[in-house]
Length: 258
Image 1 (spheres, one colour):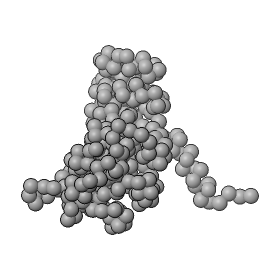
Image 2 (cartoon, rainbow, N blue to C red):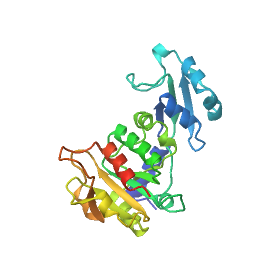
Image 3 (cartoon, helix red, strand yellow):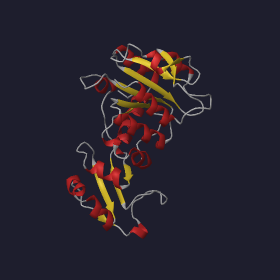
Image 4 (cartoon, rainbow, N blue to C red):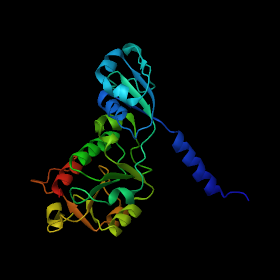
């Protein structure tokens, strides 16, 4: 029996994802990836100076480093990248299902960040850092129209990519509904909202909370807004504009800390 076209396409996409690799660069990103036992590592290219600075991390990573001339750095990355003499080829991390990450015991009530078409890897990397600092369970983005794992994202995350779950789902609204079914209160960040974050969660800090942030400019899509339990805003001293999405994520995570 001949397989349907959609089945063939799904299998091809799965094989392509399995073959995909990422080049991480920069001392922090490479060191933390080398020390991460969950990260599948393929190839390490370093200058002698970087090798000395990475020290024990190289031994822990289990790869034989390739020594490169700093003037002709051999890794296939953008020549403008600030690689600090270290680049590591890896497979993307698999954090599992949203349902598995979102539930379970922890030292504080669960917090999750969802990103609606935030495509800038530097913004996503900064959000991952904030999520780790404030103890969020995960950062969730859509598979399309979002920032994938890249060297630029990992460098901005400064190691957080190795520790902070970053999940990419097919449909954001479905993920929001799934979180609601798990007991989460889903709040969308919107500068035009009437209620502040603090007011919306008064008496509810012990609940699981999910914050949804949109791309700078367009903000949240209408479908995303409709799926939120409530739209909230960050309280500001004056009407002077809006925060960068990564800054907004940090402020909002601080506001909803347990």
